[in-house]
Amino acid sequence: MERVQFQQEQMLAELKDLVQKGLFTQKEVKQIMKKRTAFETALVRRVAKKNDYLRYAAYEMGLEALRKKRVERLKLPRQGTSVSDYTLVRRQFHIFERALNKFKSDVGLWIQYIQVAKKEGARSLVGRICARALQLHPNVPSLYILAAQHELAHLSPSAARILLQRGIRLNAESVEMWREYVKFELGFVESMRRRWDVLGIDVNGKGKAKAQEDVEESMNERKQARKEIMQGAIVKSVISNAVKALPKAALFVSVHELLSNYPTTPALCSSLLDHLHTLLRQTLPTDPVAVRLTATRGLTAGLGGAALVDALKHANEKMIAAIHEVCNDNSGKDAEGMARSYAEFIEEWVKKEDLDDSLVSNASPSFDIAT
Image 1 (cartoon, one colour):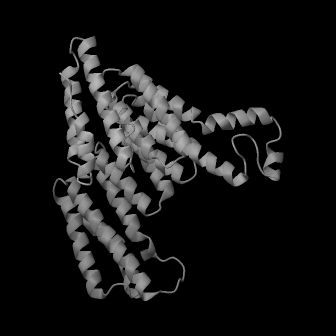
Image 2 (cartoon, one colour):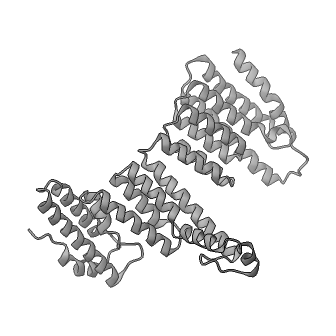
């Protein structure tokens, strides 16, 4: 109980400050003290569970949210920082630290702590938590991704790249890690394109007068370098390395989805998808999932009318051809999986609620496999 009493003593200054500012009444402060004492007692009297700490932290988050709302509503004048301005947030961090002393192996708890620290804008603390978490859990991709996102959000792309590369070295078979690295390099290319647009520099080395002076030296080399970057040379290299390290259909599906939906130029998107599908055909020529991905590449978002019908027919014909090819080339080894993939493709499109009945009827004659 000495621990509980110590924690109670630590609360007095902050609770007194809250009352003096008019943010909480004496009655509310007594209720806060009672609630905190119950939480502290639960952590001391028995073997504490993770949920005991999480409930305590959630209570403190609610208090801080209420304090902020009352500060905004009462429009209190700024008179410097007082103890109640930061202790509620600091208490949240302290609770998580105590929890992690008991549950160091709980990755979910580390991630929750990182998210809370991010929410409160504790930049340096987030970095320290990520470093500690990665020391204990070097084989958890999500921790590398969170750490890299934190560095990138604070304009440290080099640090983010190093974290992702380290994560890939230790988790080379993680689709999530490779996808995030491709996404990072794609974002880098897009940021460079926007920067050069602002400077008036294009990939051919032409630009405004000031920009022209800046890039006049070694113009040909610079022009070629910019051109290769804008054509996705860096991203293509990452994709090739990913396929070499993890030649699985799940990787191709994940990267295809990323490239198809990433907000970049149509030319770059098409070039990267071409590269991905070339690798796909070379690496997994008879994999059912890979064949379906190749066949349905033309079924992009926004298609409608005759264009959609043509794309559906084309996809259907490619899948049928692939089934026949598999049956003829390897004695039907992958035929069952290919047929299942084809059936899923048909079922997916037939069930689409927003698909016009007339389009289905126009396309349906081709939904047939010759025996």
